[in-house]
Image 1 (cartoon, rainbow, N blue to C red):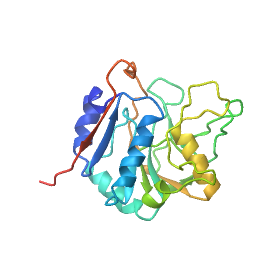
Image 2 (image 1 turned 120 degrees about the vertical axis):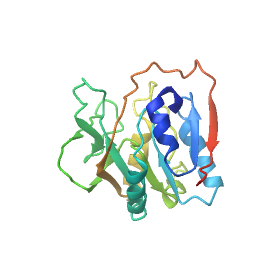
Image 3 (image 1 turned 180 degrees about the horizontal axis):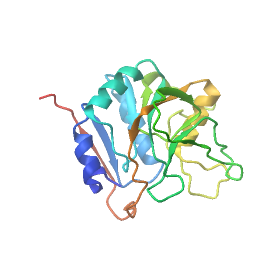
Length: 214
């Protein structure tokens, strides 16, 4: 998908004061791999923030607070509803205190229940790339077998250990002792892919938007 397919998201994203590398209409593993490679090639950046195309970003004020906090963490995300309104998981956040298994037959997401209470920043084992801010030193790391910690993966296949990039990333962090945290006070809206996918129907592309501080 493309953020422009969601007018509200695109309008809010334009107000976020940072450079943006956007991938459009691409299946896994391409979006994450392309973003990682671009980030590594441009050493002026200290952090990579990752968000799906159907997530509303924070306000500029929330972004400033979040960015100030993120400097103290290797990985810091926000929170959002897991599913669209009407689904049983709408009132749950896309973070888990326990790490779901890579084995599909044993995989279970124990989603964190949403609450009106202010909980601040909490340590988690899983976060669903909810505007996740990842430090350069994490993006630069590789596993012992040479695989990148942050990588695109193919999860819709017959591999019993197939998983989406958010889960494989969290497993890599867990194995390397990299802590993951989430700011539960910045609560974003997740549309949960309520529109038909255009991957394979529209031309895949990338575009870079340089933030100009006017």
